[in-house]
Structures are given as structure tokens and as C-alpha cells.
Length: 179
Image 1: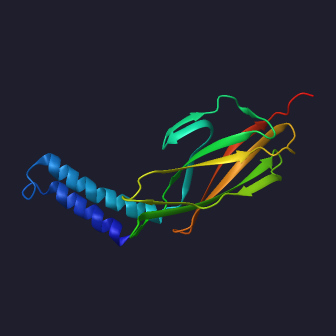
Image 2 (image 1 turned 90 degrees about the horizontal axis):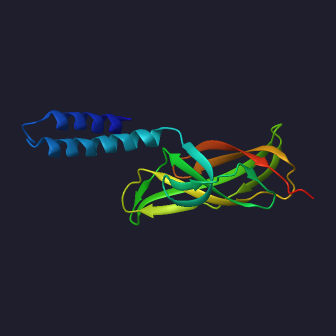
């Protein structure tokens, strides 16, 4: 918390000091850098958030994905799941800034009864700069034993470095093939 306020106040001081930095664009850039550092500290102290959980036909990068057009899924169908993660921890190491997330899911029927569950391997990454955004994509297969009906896919993501957990959910409608 103290680091957040230190960076926040330094940003304000830098932005208002037109004698030390007379160029307003340079002064804004310098203040922005300190605000970014303050925001990083604030994100690290906030809870993990899972957003924009979506079934996709393609995922290119953060925020660049093609949502599935059809709302129904079939038993045995392979799905591509996209999610954005916020407030994750990124630790500086000799290899770069390290991020590690572990995920699992449960499929719940309309009554909230668990119909399936699975755990994914840890997703780890080293980046040369602190990450501002993070997304994950997972492949999962709709279990063969699901009957027609509405289900909820509940995803739990754990930030293993920050000891934080976040959840998101998405509805899905299972439609078996007519016999």
C-alpha cells in the first residue's frame, strides 16, 4: 500500500512540476510511468478477476477472438475457452517477469449438481516487461454422458505466485444428436 501511495504522489508531483520538466508531453509521459507503477501495486493487492469467459472458434491474442456463433454444444465436442485475467502477480526474475496460473473447471447441471470436473496444467510465462494484460485459452471436451439441457461451466483460476483465486462462469446448452 505504501508503494502505491509513493508512486501516486510522485506522479502528481512530476506532473505539476513544470520547472523541472518544461515540456508538457515529456512531463505527462514521466507522470504516466509513475501512475503505471502505482496501478501495478494496486492490482497486486486486489483480488484475482476472471472476465470475458467465452467459447470461441479462434483466439489470436488478448481481446482478439472469434466467439462461437452457435449457442449449443454436443457431447464429445471439443471447445476452445477464452478468459481474461486481471490483478495477477508478476514477479521479477533473472528470466523476466514470471506469471503462473492454475485452472480447473466444473460443469454443473441446472440443479447445481456437479456433472464433470477437470484440472488444467499450470500456465507459466516469463515476459521481459511487466504484463498489463493476460489471457488464457483452454481446450475442453464436452463429456459424452451429459444429457440434453442447460449447464454452467464454472472456471476457477489460481494465481500461484500471488496466492489469489478468481472465478467465472458461462452457460452452455447441451443438445444431443437425434437418433
